[in-house]
Image (cartoon, rainbow, N blue to C red; front, top):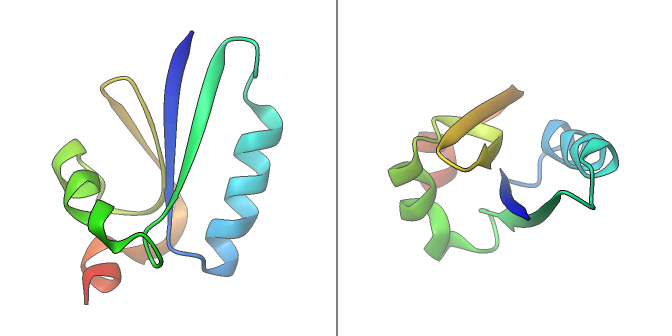
Length: 78
């Protein structure tokens, strides 16, 4: 089974994207971890290292998918 990580900062765009992603991913093929960078700030460095530039973003394996635009990672770090 594959693993995905959905990073977001809690903004309305992020919350809407989270619901869409969780609804559409095939739960029999992929497990999804949701990381709220606003409340789990110790994961910001991790997000940056995997290539996150803005949130919401979805990471599957080595691939980063930026979804819409809620906030830059610099804004989240701020």
